[in-house]
Length: 393
Image (cartoon, rainbow, N blue to C red):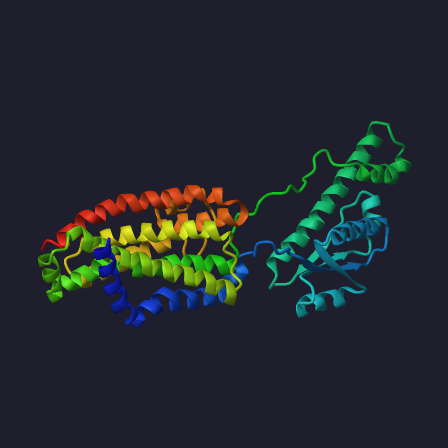
């Protein structure tokens, strides 16, 4: 064990003088995560933050139907879902939309109540801000839902008149009573654990494991470099077991990976406000992910004959797995072919474990930890086989 540590300590001393290690392992992922979060963070809803839209209401009718719609908007506003500002004229409302003061306005025409009570069609107009398509869509849904309720109430009143249950003079009253009835089915909110990373944490986590692929293969490339420079021959000739040489090189990659990942966790938490979750769960995921990536990249690098070839192969694998694993952009449809294929990568399991930890307990991360550990064992055994070839030739 002492021999293994001495080899790792020697390599760590050499690597510590290489500035590229600090750039690849720390500076690059943190800087890119900051840029990605700045540019794309708004497209990923931050966990725990409520979404509130600003709407305008232009009531040109002032009748009973308009008052009913106003009550609907007031109820939504009381639940802190929207904010409603009333405008006296349509021009004022449209100006507010153009200025970006509101996300959308809903215009109630002057003849709304009279047309509804007489059984004639009427329309509610929604004008949305081009920069707030989601807010405009929701405003349209509110208006459409209200219109559907009016149509149902009117149909119920007309049916009652046609069957003789209600006198024709009582259509308006019957429609009002039908509209006041509760729906046959309602949609209610239930409490559920949110298992989704916020934007800052997602980008830091994804980029940290992506750049880990470039650090993890240092053990094999170091052996190939020493074989090229002739120092590997001296190591083999010394009274050191070849398994100790391989273990020492692998330990170097693991230690560099752990230090880089833990430093990124601490730095991103302090600088970017990233929320990684419970420290013990994060540590389990980091350790298993680093072991899996080191084993995988050691195997890939061991297939090459030179350090340059190893670096090229490792770069290809790193980029491919990064894209496939959803490192840069979250995969929205988990049921798609790509959504299922991503779980062949350590990247996806690391991000999945962090997401489970954000909305659950440490026990929820164990499936991801187990898969990463399995990857480490399988590719570790394969890497050991190809590494023996490097220290024997």
